[in-house]
Length: 223
Image 1 (cartoon, helix red, strand yellow):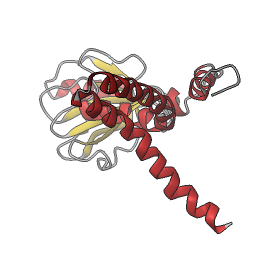
Image 2 (cartoon, helix red, strand yellow):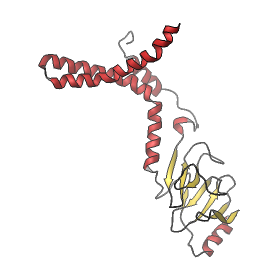
Image 3 (cartoon, one colour):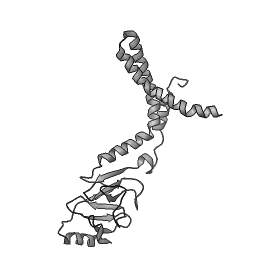
Image 4 (tube, one colour):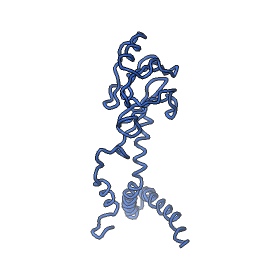
């Protein structure tokens, strides 16, 4: 407790929330990376925005559908645009570093047309009996461009992990306060349910004390 009765945890929380926002930064919480299901051959790593693109802060990176850490042969460039998923293994896209267009066969893992002009890529696409497709743009997104649930869970879990010390500082005093309240109700009513709730709410504080004792007591003893 501070001299004016304000809990230290609340002061720490306020200082974190009131920190200046970084200007035009993509580090930490300002980065957004998502995994997007594409088709049976591939999935997309969508950076919007963040670090890791060949140029700029928005791009798609194509990888195998069954392994997000495995790329496709020769398809290393990050993309500004890619066609929306359709039947078949062909994709058409634009690289974000130099704006070149290509057609690539995901099944054969080979370029149908190497990176070149947009006209060449579109001609090769149309010559295979395919209409000009609608595209996803890494900066704008588009219909059907949805993050997978696995990716959503990972993206929510990471900031919660980073904020876990703050959550503990806020949660432990609250749980102790409610535990004391239920203990007083137990003493007044002698109902076992209140005692059980009080014991359950005291568990976080007890675990924290055990952790602190195991970490810091041996360190202090060696001094």
